[in-house]
Image (cartoon, rainbow, N blue to C red; front, side):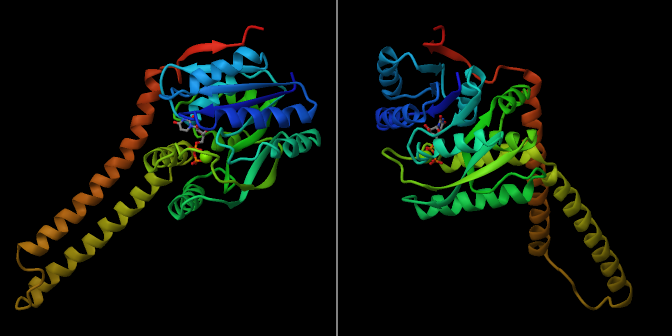
Length: 311
Ligand code: UDP
Ligand code: MG
C-alpha cells in the first residue's frame, strides 16, 4: 500500500458522497495503490449509514466508527493509527481542501520530503468572523508556543510512514496534531492552495471547539501562560510595595492630603486583584486538568466498529 487517505467525518451526510467521489477520482488518477479511511466521529445524522453503503461496494474504503464524538484531532489520530500506507494524507470531508492538491503533495513526497503540509493562501466563502478567529488563532498560538508551527496550515497534509510512526509513539491525549508534527521534525515542505467554500453543510468547529483546540495547542507546547502569570504577579507585587511606601510617606509627612478614601476605591482594588488571581488559577487549572487526563490513562478513543480492515 502506498497512500492512505484519512478523512474525519462528523455530521457530514450532505458532503460524504461528493467527497468520496472526488477523492476516488484523484486517487485513481494518481496511479498509486491506496486505501481511503473514513473515520466517523460519532455523527448523529446519516453519515455512518451512507459510509456503510459505500464501503459495501468498495473494499479500498475502510471505515472506523467511534462510539461517540471524540473530536477532530482524535479522529485523525485514529485514522493514522490504523493506516498502513507508506504515506498518510489527512484531508477534511467538506472539500474545503481540494483533493487535487494531494497529487502535488505526493510529488513533493517523491522528491524526498517527509511532511508536506497545505498552506492556505486564501480562504473562500467563510464568514468574516471565521476568518478573523482563524487568523487570530494561528498568530496567537504561534506567539504563545515554543515550537515553530507553520501559520495558516491546517491538518491537510501528507506524512511519511516515518513521521506517522513517530507520532504514534507520542501517547499524549488532548492532542494538537499540527504541533506534534512540527515537534517530531523531519524534512518539511509546504504546498500553497486556496481554501474553498464548504461543499455543503455548516462548520463543525464552533467557537467552543476552536477555544479548546487553542488551549490544547498552547498548553501542549509551552509554559508561557505560567511564566506570564509569574511575571505579572511579580510586577504587581513590586508596584503594590511601592504604593505602600508612598502611602506611609504621605501619612507621615503630608497627613492632610487624602488618598483613596472610602470603600469604592477599596472595592475596585480588591475586585481587580481577585479577578487577576482567579484568572491565574484558571491558567494553572488548564494545565492540571490535562495532567489529570494523562494520569487517568484512559484510551484516547473507543472504536465501536471497523469495516474492511481485515482484507
Ligand atoms: N470533524 C470531526 N469531529 C468534530 C468536528 C469536526 O471529525 O468534532 C471533522 C469534520 O467532519 C471535517 C473536519 O473535521 O471533516 C473539519 O471540520 P470543519 O470543516 O467543520 O471545520 P472548519 O473547516 O470549519 O474549520
Ligand atoms: Mg471545513
